[in-house]
Image (tube, rainbow, N blue to C red):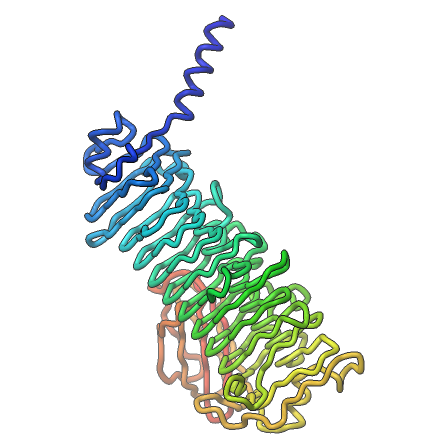
Length: 480
């Protein structure tokens, strides 16, 4: 019996480590080619392809998938691209685990030059790793990833990928991340990134370390919405050393633990034109809730301009010796940030300078046209003599499209709601309800005690904007 047991162990081990590599003869292959030459490692069954073993595209080879179809990868299987992978689905190519019980291990690009994935839907995956590989991802979907192979859905090491017009949602870890020592400069633009970090770990949805040489990290025109209380929006960090150069612009960041965080030293960033709203989901001001947080040394010198920062627990917080520039009157740093209704504990905190340094914050809108009231919204030298002064005069007192009205009393009942919600308020108001992707779901004029049917709405968080001649209010509505 002992000899039989050892034999079985050997056979099982051989199966577990079985793998197939393409010939490495500078050829271009299709999935049909692999079915023919892989000796059963790749099969076509019914109407889908299947990987049964670890598959490697060798350094000199190319695999091209230009078709509509399905590739099912068995549980625990790793797909490595050391050569080139080109996917261009027509209209969509799916990569899944057909069994549905567990993830396939993952996809690894290693020293891959020229790989691109377009019009693909990838799910049931343990993670995608890029190692010295500048892959291009466009018009693709990544969802229901685990963390079997990498912490993030797309994990970068010394790689500068393009990730554009993709949907990255409902994954266990961050959407996109790079290691502290894996200098990478991705260009992340026009993506919808939502409800990631379902593991509820202490991660942001975009979590990047040092940039690559003089290459900029670019995070542009994305919609980033959260659901889990420990997950932030965007974090750029150099806590393990190195430099970071970045542009973070025109993003919409909603409903995270915090909006945007710049953490460490030697950070040169421009944070411009972002809409940062309702990042208070954890609701603990001692642990998060900042629209923008700058934390680190004297060389953490981001320029913050033209941002709308609203309904967070804090507007902008500055810690240790960070020295962001919120407006110095120059063309490079004009200010024009709008701070509206950021606060906690019954107080408004538009800007909290928790450093001994002076901070320039000229030409910003502080939610008021009154200089003395703006002073009340800014925490600095006048509140604690150990802190540096914030220079905020002159103010920007008339931003187009921004209300300076007082808040009106309004309630939504029930909240959470399912089939309907009743608006409890004193006067007729205009209403606009948007989802966390920024889409308007309902808009119009409503009477007190009006009922709005929500039966057909998807479960999730919605933002309700109310306005009347007497003021305005913003309320978070949950549909279950």
